[in-house]
Length: 325
Ligand SMILES: Cc1ncc(COP(=O)(O)O)c(C=O)c1O
Image (cartoon, rainbow, N blue to C red; front, side, top):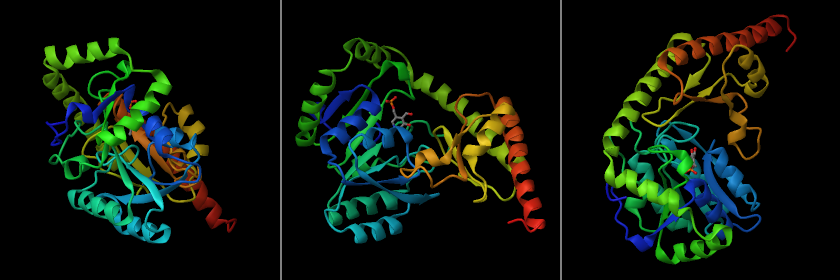
């Protein structure tokens, strides 16, 4: 935490079974049915799943290439009023699924708005150390002690070791700790011993640099292939880190119904509508992950996907010309 610019004491940190458990514990502790929760729109599917069990009313706020739109957030806050939102959930670095990063001015503005409109901020940061260009932007938690910050070793060591943490004010953590005892008493100490060994006795920062180098070349391969093959009607984000590009197609393309065709061509992606609480918005968008495949496979995948998309666009043009639309 200190390395990324946050000062907190050991009793302001609670170890969790991954950041995913932290999301569930926060939801279980704070959400009453009908409570308003603000998120980026689109946002991490696993967060929506964790929250939805406690029946909140999730309000997504759009982002642009500088992160969540603070003007639209403010409009929404004016509509719902002071004290109307329980918390705001954000993934400020290389957002999942958007790939965008919230710039420093917006992080500061977000804190001002949280004081003005009285809501908590939950900052989820699994990808922060996977940066390929640009400079480190300090965490929102470094700007305000009140923030609930979620960390995890999943993307920098091993997701199977189910180890994450919440850094938050002691008074908040003691409530979450009680809830955690009801969930699993405590996390796996075996996993934690392995994690401790890795981060104290191995050159993990050097290993992390090799991860960063690998993902960097895969990110570059995807952005280059999108430039080369995707139709001009499409747009996409340009992540400075993380795993994901968010691509948006003309609004008549439904990426869910297009998926089986892409699968037949040997390519997969995640349709955009799953990242919105209404399951409808974002249906012309898709999340493209560049973390797993080699640069060569990524280029070929984007080439094939572009052909599938081009087919859809051509069909639409043909219908339009025939006056059938
Ligand atoms: C934004 C976000 N939050 C939380 C998680 C869950 O992380 P963990 O493996 O630590 O539970 C993920 C995993 O993909 C994620 O993308």
